[in-house]
Image (cartoon, rainbow, N blue to C red):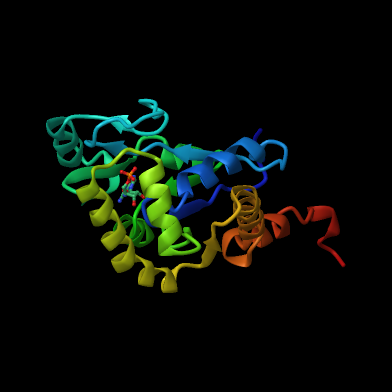
Length: 217
Ligand code: 5GP
């Protein structure tokens, strides 16, 4: 589905590991067609190992450290960061094409990446996904069974350090019920597409259609 009437916007979604941001984003993407919202997910590149239930090319593009560093050198990434000793980055190739064809794009990236994207795309909308509590975050981290005890502790501490950054995000979603958070994310995209900062360019476009036959009044 493509709305040729408007440009797409970038929606940055951040949140601590296991805040459920990935699940919220995938549910929002599933519901986007019915809500008549044209939105794509930017699949990041990472050097970390593939986890249970993850799919190469869908969850991430899984690459070697050498490949990742080549992508940095070739200037193929909009932003990148290292987390827990692994690289994560946003590929450049599809982003502008999607935006120009009217698709909005969700970037699921950390706070550091968000700052880098905002320097290049200052109109990007930022959404922070908060877990209801640290107890819930720890439960979710253990429940997904992907990380060692050491990694779980690291991710929790990283969450504590990162959550204060939510103060400068445009929107904060407390993720208790996935379905509601997914709906809220779609509402944000819809409202932001019509916000003045994203659609003001339309005023001149419409004015330019004032026909010559109307010019002599
Ligand atoms: P995880 O290993 O749990 O999938 O991701 C670890 C962290 O890396 C999360 O905070 C996630 O948002 C972040 N992340 C994932 N992809 C990217 C990316 O492309 N760029 C940046 N800067 N962070 C990313």
